[in-house]
Figure 1 (cartoon, one colour):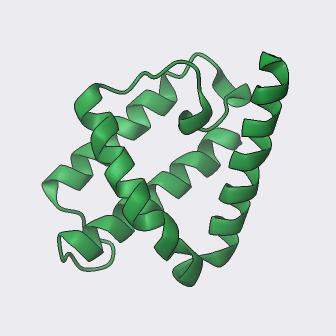
Figure 2 (cartoon, one colour):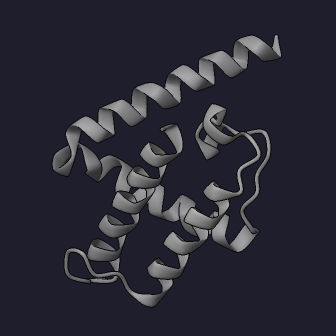
Figure 3 (spheres, helix red, strand yellow):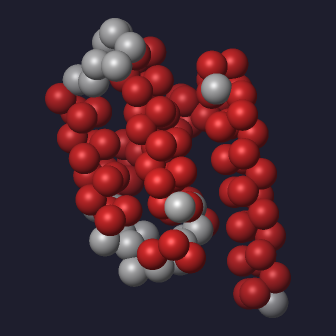
Length: 110
């Protein structure tokens, strides 16, 4: 359940990034963004934490290749602030869950 939500969020963010930066039409991804989405799907499907996983940004295991990780960070930095206008519910839920997980991880570390 959680992985599906994360995949939906990542796909939405990549789409928003591709429309804004690469000037693609809605529902259409450039080759680079299509590759990034496929890579994100692959990494999520192979996640060792399965449904107990937290968001990748809060994970202690970083399974993305450095190049892909840099690209997904660019996508998140661009799309994150813009999501509130086009998909406010997804945006707010993602923000709340990310903060909740971060708090939980900080408590476990102490």
